[in-house]
Length: 380
Image 1 (spheres, rainbow, N blue to C red):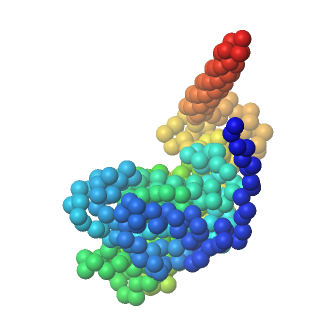
Image 2 (cartoon, one colour; image 1 turned 180 degrees about the vertical axis):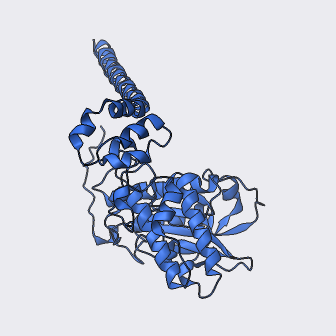
Image 3 (cartoon, rainbow, N blue to C red; image 1 turned 30 degrees about the vertical axis):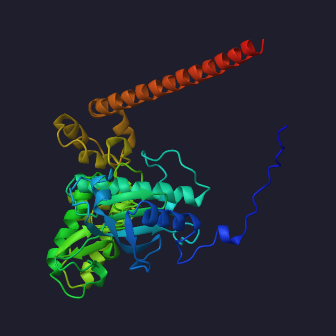
């Protein structure tokens, strides 16, 4: 006769949630101990070399065998007995002071479904987002640290070093340098992020740029968003202004914010904003469907002479005449034709997804019914 065991509820106390050095909880400590002792992947050096609002940075050494097997970055063969310098970024969970992190994930097409109520799960998505963005930068030739290993809120990355093996300084910590050259390189990073990696940094500042041998490296890409994000223009304008303000304080003759924005995005600033310095609250239409003022239509119809000629005959102060003008409406049809085709394709794609979901649900229910029938047959 088998013994009956009573299931007891595990008693939890403060030690299960205790955190020291703002990042080391029970789970992270266990992960690091496993990497050091069992897998012999890293040599960890306690003591943060940098602490920010979202994470702490620690120096370490990683086994080259791990680098050769890394699935996150481009393979670079190393000798298996070699130890390579790296940094470990451990994200803060319960102690994070950066409270509006969800606003950088919401509306991201890559992260549609995630738990917002659990801070640890949000941080896990945040860390994955940073790895994806870093890999996208490296793939497109943008200087950034390579990710090596990710588990929950722990990320191991390449250590950016100078030729003398010293750790690269943040731009804000650099005392003297060729500021004009660094300013040009910072603008090139903004341009490449937007046009090559299809990203907007959303926190581009002297704190998130490293200087190694007069080269700039971009870091802290966890909050970076797709350029198709609803607020991408606002974040980009904020990045440009922050960058200009810093280099202006160093005596650099900076370019106009509006000029930089048009150069990066290839968008034209509406006539209603001409002569106005852009800020993060300015609205810049990116397609003709977002245009509110008739005079701004010329920004999107430079290659359509028939519509431009029609617009020139319209009285800007008379909205009724604008609506009744057949030539203008004809031009509108030509401009919107491509957008309608795109919308139709997106709608068809959505319908296909819904049908596929229904088929999956039907097959799942059919499997459940089949299992129940088999169980009932066995009982008989």
